[in-house]
Image 1 (tube, chains in turn yellow, purple):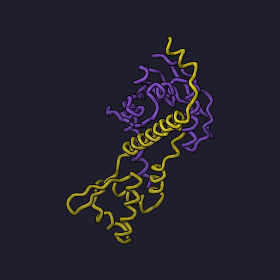
Image 2: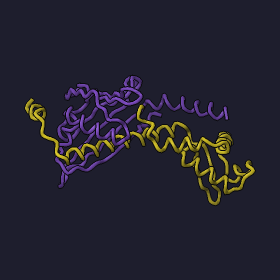
Image 3: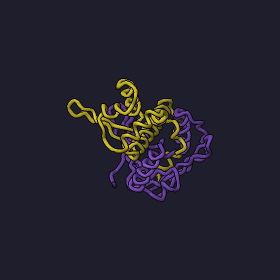
Image 4: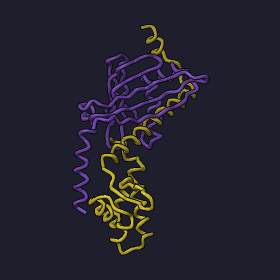
Length: 122
Length: 145
C-alpha cells in the first residue's frame, strides 16, 4: 500500500476530479447513462469544451463510453472496477520491475552462493 | 463476486532456469534485486529484513525502509519445485493476511537461449468485501458534489 503513490493512473483520476465542471458531469451521470449531447446541454459551454472534459474523465477512468450507431453514451465506471484496475496496474508494474531487476542482476553475474549448493544436497 | 483478479507478467532471461529460481530463495540475491527494483520505482531501496525459510510451509519476510515507515512483505511458500515452479502467499498488511487470498505463482520454462518466467499474482474473495464498500464510498462522494 505504501508504494501506491507512484501511479500515473491515480494522477489521471485526481486530475479528472479536480475541476467543478467535470464533477458536475459525474453528478449528472450518477443518475444513469446519458448521451454526450444530453450531458453537454446542461452546460453553458460549447460541445467541444464538454467533449474535452469528457475525455479527461475517460482518461481518469471515471466514466466509460458506449458507442451505438451515431450515439455516444456515457456512464460512470464503478469505483470497484477502478480499484481493481489500479491494483492490477500496480502489481503488474511491481512484479515486472522485480523480474527485470533479477535479469539485470544475473546478467551482471552474481557470484554463486554456498547456500545454493547446501540446498541442493539437503 | 468471487472472480479471480490476476496480474500477470513475463520476463525472458539469458540465464538458466536454476539461476532465476535461486534468485528468489537466496536472501543475498533477494536483497540485491529487491533494492534495485525499489530504486527503479523511485523508492529508497533501503532493505532491512530478508528472512527466507525456503521449504514448503516456510515463511519469508522482506522489508524496506521508506519515508512513511518500514514496508513489510511476507508470506508462506506453498510449492517449491526447483527450478520450474514457486508458489507463495504474498501479504503487505495484516488485513491481507486475514483475507488470505493473495497468491503468487512463478513458473519458469527453459528456452534455447535461457529461460522465460511467468509470474501470476492472484487475488480473489478480498474484492467481494471491498466492492460493496467502495460502491457506497462512490455514492457518498457524489452526494457531496
